Length: 545
Image (cartoon, rainbow, N blue to C red; front, side):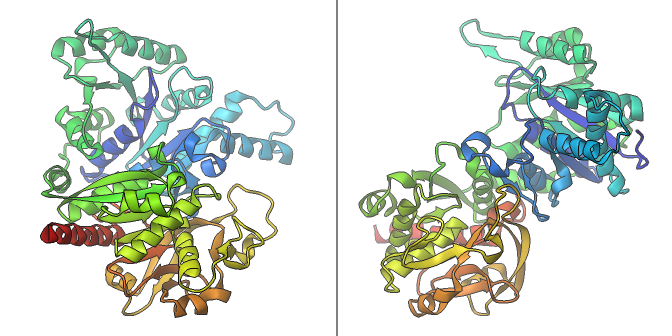
């Protein structure tokens, strides 16, 4: 199996423990190579047997990142997009479930002509095909960086590691590079940095048949030259290829730290990628802006997954981007919507500079979200609702202002007397849960003179969706009479995409997920506007006091 593209391939693996930050390391390397003038794409292999994370609990998996083409993917795809500044798609995230599904489909179709279907070569060939097809589809790609999920030694990831081992023989040493992220812990009681976990991790990798070319050593403390030489000696790499990956306060500092260690230069030398230095000045300006913000705002995120913050990863990053653009640090206050009612909402949220109600599924915690939205509406607190946040805002206004006290969503109360939120027509009758929601990017037309139109400064936008329920058009006139403006609609006018309250300082909600398209140097307009409104409220409170 040979690539005709001339693309170089980098494979990123992790060892010792999970959660070392392979996604950030891979994204950082992607940024460094991109800033050298190279065309870079990225691929994530996830070893789990689910076809995609769409049916997995946020407590298990964290955020589901949705791409323009409607793929439900791992949250690392969000990091890839934010660091590379380019949109990715379904071909950039492949699970073991997808691999086996493809193989079994071929087997049932008779493609294997009666041969026994085995892990080697059939599974490994399918995995390699995903890597090579990504390069072959785009002849301008210089580099494909592939991250392999899990930890070296896991049973689940063995077929993927075997596949990338074979790539070296298919494409040649000059076209492939193996980068291994590992842990170098500091044992406080002994006052020593320990290299043995890294040695054992590399030993396991070499037993599989992969000799890493570069080691990224995750550490709390600096690694002196003696430590690097010791790691290099026992792991069969040059000390120059032992790269310190020290903990950073912000993920956006990581590329700068790795570049200071010479990472992109070593990769470029090994793969023949040229001598050009990466231009990181714009990235440095962004990082300085994050670090040196002179103002602060407190914004409450009212959700039901607040004990598992990976569920809101893109929201967290969107606030970082928007804060930097406003010369402000956004201090997110996490509020569990399950513990909110009107009394506790007033107690916990009145002093906030802004409130965001994110998406979610199921009835649990919804009434707390409605209580938070009521407080924001009545007390003039800047508010942004996302997906279920829009639906909860519709329910709140219908009950409190539009004269529909029993209003609800058919998702929560199928027989409620005023179903202001209902199942989309095309969703009715579906029996399969995975991959059947309204997914991916859809156009939205903005109403002239609206807050949405001012925030975006354009007439039409494209945003990413992940939902089954929509505003019930039968109640639009009654809601409009109660003060609701439908400021963003699908091109045919049938689907409500954005709502707002014109008489409020800042009250806007979207059926789509704006956080998915925010970038470090291109913050999403709605997040940027929310932070600006929160700053105005914060400053007015200071003036009054």
